[in-house]
Each structure stands twice: as C-alpha cells, then as structure tokens.
Image (cartoon, rainbow, N blue to C red):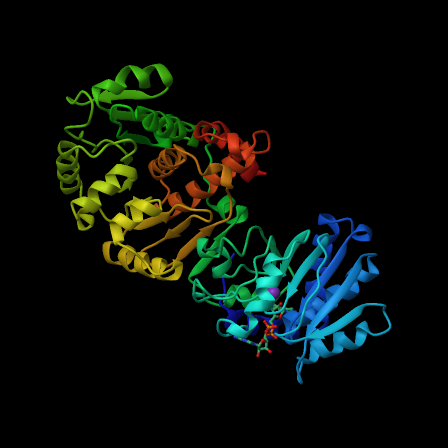
Length: 501
Ligand SMILES: NC(=O)C1=CN([C@@H]2O[C@H](COP(=O)(O)OP(=O)(O)OC[C@H]3O[C@@H](n4cnc5c(N)ncnc54)[C@H](O)[C@@H]3O)[C@@H](O)[C@H]2O)[C@H](O)CC1
Ligand SMILES: [K+]
C-alpha cells in the first residue's frame, strides 16, 4: 500500500469525487460510515455516550456525520463545534442535518469551559490532514482538558488533531492523545513513527473506496507493507526441489555468554527455509549449538570465548554477521579484515558487528547490497543523533544511497530503507516482541531469505513482515508479556501458512 502526503490525499479525494460521480458530501458519509461500523463493534452503542469535538473543516464534517449515525444507532451523543464565521460546505450541510435530531450541539472557542463525563467516549474530529502548521498556543487549555479529563476512551478521526501528516510536528506541540485513530484509505507517515507514540496507541486504516487508478498512477516512494505485497514476493518449493535450491547460509557470531543469540538466529534461518545452515562460533559455543539444534552444522574458530578469525565464506549463498559477537578488539580487527576480503558478498549485519563498524568508522567497507539491521541505539552509534523521526529517515536514506546498502530500522513499524530511496513501513508485529533475542531471530530470517535468492530489498521486506506475523500469531496463545524470541521461530511456519492462504 502506498503512503501519500496530505496534498496527494486531497488530490485523490477530488479525483474520486469526479471519477465516481459522487458528491464530496456523499464521500464524507461513506468515510464516516466506516468509522461508525468500527465504533459499533468496539462499543455497545445503546450503552455508550459519545462527546464529539468538531472543527470547522471536513474533519469536523466527519464528526458531525458521525454524530448523526451514532444517534441513529442508539448511542447518546453530544457535539461541541468550534465557533467560527465560515465552515466548509460539507461541514455546514451536516450541521443542518443535525437539527431536529435531539442532539445537543454546543459551539465553543478556545476559552470555553468544556464538559465530559468519566464514562464518555471522546471523539476528536477537530483537525485532520488539512492542518497546515502546529496548533497555536491558544488551543492548549482545550487540548490539556481533552487529554487529561477522565473518560472511557479517546478516538480520533483520520489524524489525532494537531499532528501534521507528513512533516515533523515539534515535540512540544499541542496534539490530541488518541487511544485509537481511524485513518482513511492510506496511512499517513506521521502515524507510523515512534515520535507519535503518545498520540497513536492503536491505528486502523479504513478502506473508503477512493479512486484506485489514481492511487496506482500517483508516484510515491513510501509504502506500508501488508500481507498481499508479501504474498506476491514469497517463493515456494516444487516437487523436485533439493536442499541446494533453498540456499546455503552461514551465520557468524557468538561470544561467551551470548551463544543463545546464535542459537536463535540459526534456528530461525532453518525455519525460514534455508537448505543448509552453518554457524560459526568461538569454541565455547560448539557443544551448546550442537545440542540445541541438530539440523545446524557448527564450525568453530581458534578463539575460546570470542571470535579471533573469520571464516572463508565463498561457498555460501548468504552470510549473517554479528549476533552475540561481542566487542573484543581481536574480533573487531578480524571483522574489518573480513569486510575488506569479501567486497562481493552481500551480508546481513546486526548487533555487535554494527557496533564494531561504528567504532571502526568503516561503513564504507560494507559490501554493496548488504542489509544492516540496527535498533535505535545501534543506529545512533552509526549515524549520531537526529532531531526527529523524519530527520532520522532522511539521514539514513542518504547513507543507504551513498553506500548502496539496505537499512532495516527496527521498531514498532520497522522501516526498510533502500538505496533507491524507497522506504517500507512494516505492518505486522506487536509490543510483545520488544524482548531480547527477537533481533537475532530476524537476522537469521533475513539471511535465510537472501540465501534463497531473494534480492536484498525483498529479503528485508519479506523477513521483517514474516517475523512480525510470527509474533502476531504467537500472541494468539501467549500474553505479549510472556512472548520470548524462541516463540517467533516456532511460529514462522504458521506465518508462511497464513500468507499462503
Ligand atoms: N480523502 C479523504 O481522506 C477524505 C477526508 N475527509 C476528511 O477531510 C479532512 C480534511 O479536511 P479539510 O477541510 O481539508 O481540513 P481539516 O478539517 O483537517 O482542517 C482544516 C481547518 O483547519 C484550519 N487550519 C489548518 N491549519 C490550522 C492551524 N494550524 N491552526 C488553526 N486552524 C488551522 C483550516 O483553515 C481549516 O479551516 C480529512 O482529514 C478527513 O477527516 C472527508 O471527509 C472524506 C474523504
Ligand atoms: K482529528
């Protein structure tokens, strides 16, 4: 699914109205009906009271339409509408439709005293994608009230009001803190970034039937990766496949006390479909690995507790480096030599291998089309501080292009950034996956896919999605708090099954 900026969505809105021969009023009704249907399943309408805060534009128009639909659905509804001289035409038309429907509509301004009861649902329909700059300070008392007053839940239509859709919103800006955001048709970049974590606790994208041809023909360099996209990329075996068809991969890493990382990575590589997996660890890891995973071959180097020499990798289809590697200076020296000696080998680089590359300032030695999978702290060591998520993405884009490598920025919506400046936000996964070893599992999975013949970009996109989906399937039976990295490995098979459906 493409991600559009606000201007592109507004153009899409206009195209839809013209191509589908419907009025913008009808489109608003169609969009809001989707929100209504969601609320209908989230709450028992006849027992729920909604207080809807409406702005002066079309986001406010959505709120007014929702008021009418909720009232018809049996809910209790109260509307607070921003006082102004000029409303958008669809907003005004919906105001007229609320007359004689026994809905209390109270006009307010930034100085008004608002009232919400503790079991009300607050609906925020103040500002959507039409917001062109951060809200003025005069709005602070209203938003402080909306964000702090006790209530059942906070719901935003399209955007949490105050959040700009496609450029950064300053940290101190005034923004509504939504429990759930129902956004229309396509996700907006700001909704997917961790800078918005306080404002978007849950996100749902509602298909409102906007013009598909226009979406198809409009250029975008940002995508939201969903199951359909991954389904089209996943390769499968044939009756006559042999293990050589599924790639021979080697995972290099481990140090005393961190052999578990290699166990997780190599198990995940097997479960993702590699024909043959070899792990290369220091001596102390040999018995552990051979005992833990019979399917995996184990090779060791001269070092007892850490890797002193890297192996020859010419006979492998893909190489994963870094899980549990440690930062010993001999390991660092060996890694730098390894990078210089293997300029033509695409690598998957994770954890301490990334930290060593940062310390040694040798990103330029990384082979082209390698995949780097930093988490937040590893990325900071690599590129320094950033001002905000948009700035972070820009910096990484430049680096990916300069070095012709792929970055996988791990997080809630893991972001894959390719050298052609396209970026992919992942849609699968859950907070239970914020636990040790999950990154090692991902490295094993991406290495496996690279070895199976996926391009670097495909391996990153598919690996990240499958990994998140395995986590989503795991929490069907396990509480997110109890999810551990090995639960992901166990569910890779179910993730494949679900994608193949
Ligand atoms: N295609 C779709 O996705 C559809 C979207 N719908 C809804 O329409 C809004 C966008 O509506 P629009 O009228 O363009 O803008 P807003 O309602 O978001 O707000 C505009 C309103 O606010 C004023 N304004 C802008 N910036 C500021 C600011 N910094 N401070 C104060 N006031 C500001 C501006 O002048 C306007 O008056 C979209 O989000 C959806 O909710 C349709 O309903 C269906 C199709
Ligand atoms: K809103």
